[in-house]
Image (cartoon, rainbow, N blue to C red):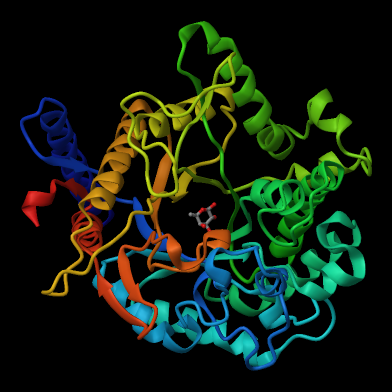
Length: 468
Ligand code: FCB
């Protein structure tokens, strides 16, 4: 049996190799991925669940932030969002139709532990039981993020949220409870999603909840979030009911210079920005500059942060540009998405390679988010011809394939997002879904990008759109 299996794998690998070569030579329109490659999509609780005050859910910092006029475009809120709390079965059925191997979602901490410490809310807990069971019944791997930005407001009010060290212990306790409950069925766990955003958008620019504008607090939060990752990892491993795949998701950008004379600046920016996370996580170190910003720091903190990880998730949307004149925008001839983010697929390959080169000890990588916001029009026939989004995804996936060929160990790709949803401060004005949501009726419709992605996931190959 085993030999047969190996032979089949070898045969598949050989065929894939030939197909890749043909693609590179322009003789074919298919590009194979390794047989273990995981295709998924992602969402986060606050962006899709709705039911903001139902079944005992506590208030989150996003519930509060959205209520303050001026914080969110058009005064939108996540109160209803995509109503996934009530429609999860339908959404998981969509995942099945999209041939997904995995669905990445987050647990709303205040739904399962309304005050962020103390009593758990059984009604909230059982919601995720049902969601997980539904996914497993459809043969889809659940990938849980423990924290995707919706801190219980009570922890913010009582302690100052992540600015206070005690929140680290509360996060570890919450993690332990979740892993204890769900890890009999869920293997893939992420401690934090994009801690850079929680820290700096939440506490320096005030663009995100909790809307604080204080660089000193932001730096402390950044450090404390890394402590949460470390303490959460230890708690998760202790409570695990099976061997977990445990990691963190970072928005690492590759900095590049438009003018070759500024290349050294780009290099420095990469080392500073990515290094701020990768040095402590992978090497137990901070640069002098990073350390200087952190007021409450203890020597043993670095040992806590530096836990073994099973994978690193990378969210990539655009590269970041540096220049000695400070002017980087707009890039002549460049395309931009509706977010104003430059479309630059090749930089994703460079980023993946750069991480491997600078951090050879890095665990296997997953692209945990990648996608684009564009305005979508529903045709009279009820189709959404979102060619730009489809092309965005295809061109980025192509770069992932090339990075794998370069030798980078990338194990999966998650399109952001399954559904159009609540895009934080931009409200419902920015659509990232490969499935369209009519927010007035909650009707879902798979866009052309979704149809194409389904075919890619099914065949484990990049397929040019005309083959649909
Ligand atoms: C990322 C977030 C995700 C989504 C995308 C567009 O920074 O993790 O929730 O908003 O951006």
